[in-house]
Image (tube, rainbow, N blue to C red; front, side, top):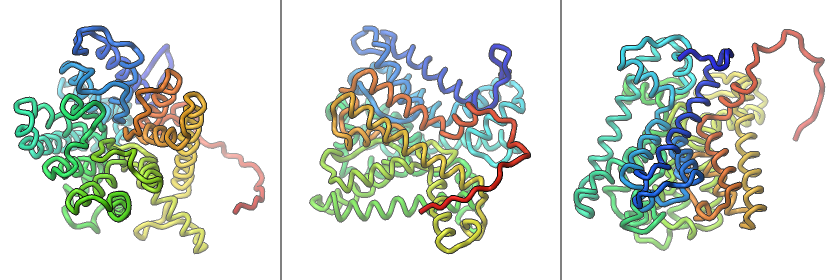
Amino acid sequence: MSGRIFGKQLNAFQIIIGGFGAIILLGAGLLMLPFSSPTGRWTGVEDALFTATSAVCVTGLVVRDTATCWSLFGQSVILMLIQIGGLGIATVTALIATVSGRKIGLLQRNMLQESISAHQVGGILKLTWFICKVALAAELLGALLMLPTFLSLYGRSGAWMALFHSVSAFCNAGFDVMGAHTGPFSSLTAFSDRVGVVLPVILLIVTGGIGFLTWDDMARHGFRFRRYRMQSKVILTVTAVLVLLPAAVFFFGDFAGFGLKERALAALFQAVTPRTAGFNTVDLGNLTSEGRAMTVVLMLVGGAPGSTAGGVKTTTLAVLLANAAAVARRRKAPRLFNRRIDEDTVKCASTLLMLYLFLAFLGAFVISAKEGLPFEACLFETASAIGTVGLSLGITPILGLLSRGVLMGLMFFGRVGALTLLFATFNSAGAPAAQYPLGQINVG
């Protein structure tokens, strides 16, 4: 990979964006083929492009039911796109290059570093192999755990269903192939009380969403939490809080009318799936306004950097909360686990939150105005898109071309990452030495 186009040298950020775009177009082309349709007919470019974008961006928003509107070949293409999108273009490219005996240059190593949010280039190939091994092991284990339930219900086709849902869950994609058995767009609602499906999916979602570097810490240090990187400590702490607290709220609120077993499983699943898997075991239309609002917040937060999840990331939330605490206590810098947070990190976190909120609300406003739908429902869809979640209140399949374009743009933005897009667009050589005079302005 030379990193040049039309004679211009591209940076790692621009190559990552171009790679995602190329895979989306390739996937859309494959999904348009008659082989991808159960009817043997060509699929329209709009549906194929939307599905490919959702798969590569591991979102799960769909305009066609995956089980009934795509053939086994089409479903296999979708699963391949999910796997590539979940691990990252740079990771998959490096893996193929290494297997084929090609040398990995400095540009490719920089791409890997940015793709998996590593702190240094050194040892990046070893870490990449570790990521691929963990991903494969987790997906196979998840499929084996779900296999007995699916085999008992659906016979030999249950093996494909177990594998598909395992990969989709680990990659935080939210695509399902249940439509032929439990109704189109039904997700996992037929398994709300099935421990053999619900718990493996929850574990896969969390495993994929805590980040590649966190896996490395856990493999190196086991349960010796104090030896983990500060980032891993923050990720695990925030993840635990964002699972347990919402689960308690859902348990005593939205699902109070369920039986104890189903209530506990539904509450835990609903706390985990918005970050950012997209499966659902209950009808989201029956959630209270408070439950939907909490789901939107969880979708925007997402998972960890360098993971299969999207959103502004758990570390971003932790940095902003630590900065708020520092302001309240009049400290010069925020702290996390007895470590000072750099000022540039705080700036990046603030920028990320502003961009995600602005684009989610702008997209909801455009869709609401264009389609004549309630703003709250549109905000749920746009938050799901930009957070690469895939949860839906059922309005995505009925949207027009412009609204679908808005969702595709948000999905791409959410998967590639706001900072990647900014750094690719504004390829600055560095900050100027001279500075403007200091100005005084009051806030708050």
